[in-house]
Image 1 (tube, rainbow, N blue to C red):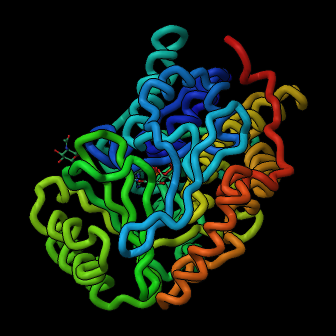
Image 2: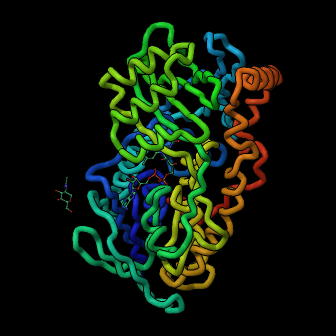
Image 3: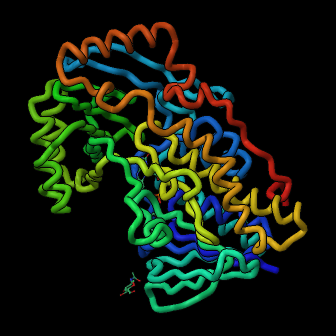
Length: 430
Ligand SMILES: Cc1cc2nc3c(=O)[nH]c(=O)nc-3n(C[C@H](O)[C@H](O)[C@H](O)COP(=O)(O)OP(=O)(O)OC[C@H]3O[C@@H](n4cnc5c(N)ncnc54)[C@H](O)[C@@H]3O)c2cc1C
Ligand SMILES: *[C@@H]1O[C@H](CO)[C@@H](O)[C@H](O)[C@H]1NC(C)=O
């Protein structure tokens, strides 16, 4: 019996799950709210278990072809002087520096994942269908105890269909999560009391190809990265209450957002005046993306209900550690693997294994996620209030760089990892 699955969200986790499920006896529909492939975003990286995971998916060559080569990460002071430098390490180890060996533009990764799933299909079975410009309107499921239960779905375009499993891969603002938890459940988004923005301007000679971060007093940091020689990507983070920015965020007006961000960073020393001039006047800067930093922290045993389950940012988004893509990859592999393993073990259909399989997925994967969430440092400590605080941060970072600390896994999370990737024979080969 074919397992009929609906995946909601064509970002990273959704297509990755579609890929693993396509290796089983399934029929997968992947819907995306956007009218076309949403291949945007800045630099993302693959870390820790994300690296062997990507190799397992057979996309290493495709990823390497679009990898951004970033020599390392540096902290500078407001006069532009280097205070600490952490070079990237290019090895096959699962440990990565601040700049990972596999830095890639999010859009390139989305393209690889969606195209790859399709490519694999045309070669074997056409069991994954991509549907754009569509979302879920209503969701109802049969009783949990019914081994042949279905989830009844009504789409925004009016169509209706039944599925054996529905997967919310629709990001940290997940609509499937809202429906699954019910109207009275508290919002699981935990605010990191910070805002982040990024945009693009033309580069000039003298711009560094290192990931460069400059702290400013008032809990602010501005940084640059360069994935192409003629463009400079500007990153900004500010911690604490920012009424003007908050208002601009609510207005959803790009002009208001540009005004609010530039007020925060103008006269900040280094090259901030050029960057803020670019933000206000360069057409490239219309790509400004501004967001509140938040993490989805769901209580234990709430990643699924019956045959509805969450993966990726919808289940456990994290904002600081740069593990979003890695967790999206690993989680989708474990979900597909646990269901397949359980069905084999119990000698049942995949559909009959969904109810327990989704619980086993959370049980196996939650420990890895906990290792990466809620970093021991609040963001506040990494964004000092005063010049004096910034001086201390630079001194500590300088020592850490000198001692080679950044090399043992810049985020700390992967170096301590005791968690290892499970193996699922059902997902191998073919
Ligand atoms: C446009 C965009 C830009 C991003 N840029 C960065 C970045 O620069 N750096 C970084 O580290 N991380 C970025 N992220 C987040 C990063 O992709 C995730 O942290 C991580 O890869 C996990 O991916 P995900 O698939 O769980 O979620 P996401 O990547 O957020 O993907 C969710 C997908 O679901 C779709 N969707 C949402 N709601 C619905 C709905 N109701 N119905 C159907 N589809 C829906 C969205 O359009 C999106 O395509 C970005 C995400 C998005 C959507
Ligand atoms: C998306 O769907 C809506 C209605 O559901 C329709 O009005 C619109 O034209 C569609 N857009 C595209 C680009 O197909």
